[in-house]
Length: 326
Image (cartoon, rainbow, N blue to C red; front, side, top):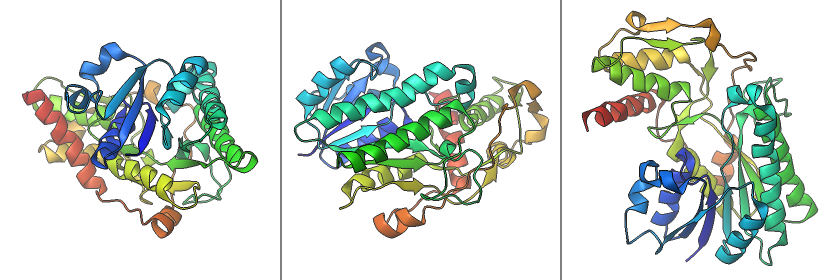
């Protein structure tokens, strides 16, 4: 049985990845920052299954900033595949907390790479990068050769980590790579993201638990995809004969207004009756609409997206409706 190690296993991507790897008969090791929150996390169904926990899924308490502890844990686990997904995940928050963001993302990744480099049998290593590394790109759509030009501390830290993974691949011949991920959503998205904020508000308004939804810009556009598709792409990247960087994206742009309209209309509501705009929620630095070209991933890996934008919105809204009924 192959062994994999996941940082950020309780997050959206980490939980889907854990499920995917377990379905493929992996032994999965995961780093857990807050063990007291497992009962309400995205992997609670795995943790509560005695046939999985400590049989096929092994969780290790700790922080990915603690290199000494991590070195011991990873050396003991001896994974063949390593997925580094953990780190501060908000471009907006990074403008308020730049030092914490850069340390969490940039130095955190560097520590991981150093640990991997020292192992007798280094695993294949994937870093979850972001379209934020492109910031204000010179052309659209962006691909693996587009110059990195971040506009936030978050994007800059992601770019540093992405460069680091490439450097270790070249300088130390490690099998390291970066998945350049465009926005990917699911019912497991945090409410820190506008997509889940909208989906949750629509369900609550329909149930009479909320009257209005306050948003910033409605014109902002993003390349939104279905998260499990992107997790599948990350796994495919580490199965390829030659480990390399890949953009994972839909190649389609949609606005916040479109997302809002579809979400409300799905529950037979008129979004204009409930949505208010707050200038205070506008992002200080709004990057050019990121749109990705996943041609390389489709050609080399055979990767593809399986869920349309409209279906993605509907799934998120329906999930929130069901959660209110339980």
